[in-house]
Amino acid sequence: MVAHLDKESKGIDFLVLWLDNDREGENICFEVMGICEQNMRKTPVGFSRNVYRAHFSSLAKPDLRAAYEELKDGPNENESLSVDARQIIDLKVGVVFSRFQTMYFTKKYQNLADKMISFGPCQTPTLGFCVQRNFEMNNFVPKAYYKICVNVCKEKDEKIMFALDWDRERTYNQVNYHYSFYPSKKFTQNEAETIKAELSKFQTCKVNFLEISDGFKAKPEGLNTVNMLKVTK
Image (cartoon, rainbow, N blue to C red; front, side, top):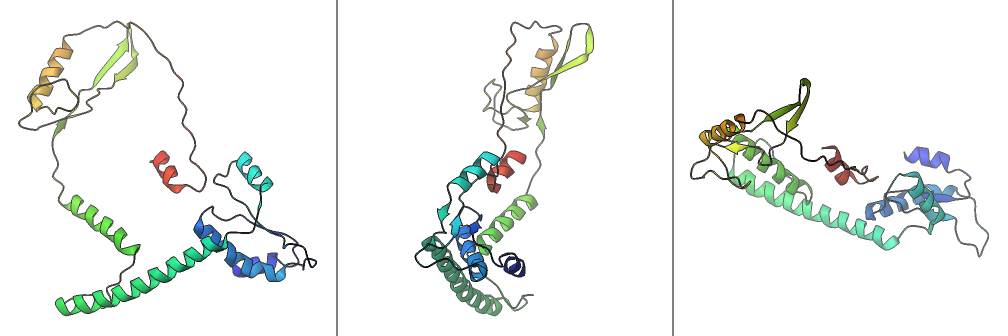
């Protein structure tokens, strides 16, 4: 990447930085400038350097055009320095605690497979999430549950089927719960069978009204992986 930027920046007059719109992006901007600025043509004395920063949070054409039309003069140096400071702090804290953990655990547990027990401000919490999830999976106890599934068809046309949704979704075999139509209650198998028997008494139904509405689901925002994963999950 360094070689590519160095090659493509030979003799350029302008440099427009299209990096992520956050502090890490500002920090990378200065890395790119460190490679490309030395290859730029010199601007006359008294003129500002031709280095601009584009701020955008979406890859949609209107947003990119707006970012281009509102270019700023270079990236924010303070935001970039804050990233440098965080990286130094993370490194120093990681080194100190890695040494401390290694000395402590290797003395306490002689049969450790690893001789280095590393620590990191990002690595360790993430590892904690993975371990917690592993405990939950290993200790998972399956429970029987029951669902009320009702399918109806158009009169004299059994090919057109409609599945009805039950707002309680499922029932659990749980003691000390009483029969109730409130969604917060959980039912036993016998109570689920009672609901099924009541529904079985109805052979036909009548549609009193039909409501149609349009739904809209926005596409995920560009460069926002959190929202993208929520949408695609």
